[in-house]
Image 1 (spheres, rainbow, N blue to C red):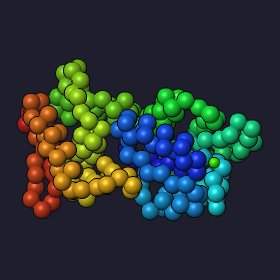
Image 2: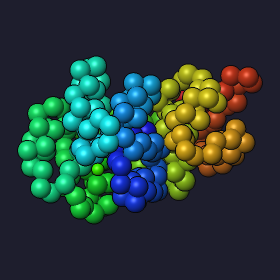
Image 3: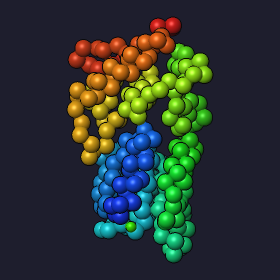
Image 4: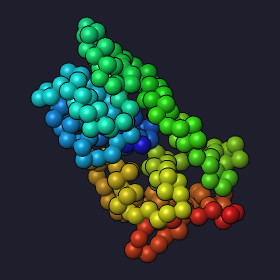
Length: 223
Ligand code: CA
C-alpha cells in the first residue's frame, strides 16, 4: 500500500511517516500543494493524506483537481481546529474523512485502515492463496490460523506477488511497491527480502520462483 502524505509541518510529517512505515505502508512525503498535485498525476497511490493549509496550492485545490481528473483514491484531510468551514468544503470536494489537529497517531492509523477497507470490495480485503490468508488492511498473514511473522518489507513483497496472482512480477515493480522516493533503494536489499520471504513460505507449500531476467512468480505447490 502506497500513501502520499502532503503536509508542510516537517515534524508532524516525520511522525506520521514513521508510524505508517512501521505499519508496513510505503510513504511518500511532499510539503507543498504543487508537489502533491504533480505526484498524484505521476504515481499510483492507494491513499492521500492531505493537509489543507499547504503552501503554493492549498489542499482544497489539490483535492478539487484530483477529483476533476476522476482519480478515486480515498482522501483523508487534516485541518486546524478553527477552520470548520474548510473541513465542510473538503468533504464537499470529495474527501472521505478528516482529522482535526492535534490528533494521536493511533487515531490516524485507525482512520487510514478504515478508509482502505472502505475503498475495496470485501473480497479484496483478505487474499487467500493456498493455505495462506493475507489480511491486507490489518497487515497480518496467517496460515491455518497461525500468524506468520513477516517484516514490513516481506509483507510488501508478498502483497504485490499476491495482487498479480499467477503473473510474473518484475524487480522494478517490486521496488516501486516497496519503497518511497526518499528511501535508499537497492536491488540487493530487495532480493534479500524476497529470499527471506521465500524461506518463510517454504514450510507452507508456497514457492517464489525466480524467472531469469524477468522477475518472480508465486506458485502454490498444493495446486
Ligand atoms: Ca499546514
